[in-house]
Structures are given as structure tokens and as C-alpha cells.
Amino acid sequence: NHCISDFISSTHTDYVGTMLLTSGKNILELADDYKDNKHDDYTSLLIKTLADRLVEAMAERVHLEIRQQYWGYEDSTKFATTANSNTNTNANTTVDVNALFACKYEGIRPAIGYPTQPDHSEITKLWKLATDAHPEIDQYLSFAGDQSYMLNPPNSISALVFANPRSKYFSSGKICKDQVEDYAARANLPVSTVEKNLQPILAYTP
Image (cartoon, rainbow, N blue to C red):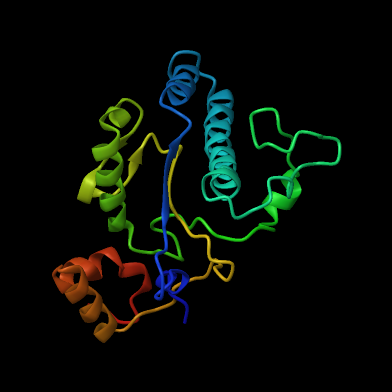
């Protein structure tokens, strides 16, 4: 079975990137206004769908810039369309969206709490990193903590970023009691807490 730690070098210095993104609270306030004050559920639903698509597009763009600008391991012309002569990944760059959707690039950005990284509680560490570096983040995002580990507004994304050319998305699969106990010991958490956090992938009934 795969593990995301397999995608970090054990022989030299390596890096993991992080993302915390949102398309904002205002767009949901607009959706609520349509639903509550204008009694237009359909438009409200469309706006919420747009909010989700916007943050997904933002994640795709940020990941592109990480690969091409910040980490610089990907040629900046790789996803440029033939109609575009500008080789810099700036706001005016036209990219081949279909190629991006097909994940024709090296590296992954698994969302915390999803199959590749199923322990949703790990977002607590990402939230602390983000708020320590950018205290103003709470103007745009809030975090429910260990009540649900949810970001608010829901049109938000948390993810880890890996550059390893062999990295890929995968499902962690079911885990047994001895694996839970080992993970709990390394995470310095009670076994019962780990069982709660990883309940969907337990191969046994606690």
C-alpha cells in the first residue's frame, strides 16, 4: 500500500507545501440573500455551486504557480496554449485547462480528510501554521476545531502539496487495530481518538 510519506525523500532535504484557500464569505452571503430575502432557491444554489468551482479553480492555479514559479521544477510553457506567446505564469497567461484537468503534471495536492490523507484532524496543524504566519486569516476563514474539523465558509480547501514525480493519488484502504495503535503512539493520541478520526477506514468495529 502507498503512504504519502513515501513521496518525501529520506536521503536529502525535501519539502511539503500547504494550501488554505477560500472563494470567500461574501459569495455565500449573496446566496443566502437570494434564498432568504428573494425566495430564489435556484439562483442561490447556482451561486453556491459557483463558489465551489471558484475555489477549485484557485487551487489549480496556485498549484500551477507552485510548480512553475515557487518550486520551479516545471517548465512555465508546459501548459501554455499555442495562441499565447507569453511564457510567464501571470494573470494574463492562457493555459491548457484540459491538460490540467487530466493531471498531466508531476506532483499532487491531496486534500486533508480525503482518501489519500484520511485523518481530517491533521488540518489542525495546518490551521496553526497558517494563523501563526498570517493572523489576519480569520477575516476570511474560520475553523471549527476538533468539533468537526470543518473550514467555514464551506467553499474552502485545505491541501498538502508534493512534488515527487512518482507521487499519485490513492485511497488509503482499510486499517487494522495494530495499525491504529501504532499511529496513535506516534501521534501521541489516545487510541479512541484515532479510531474516531479514522472511523471510515477502520477494518474492525471499535
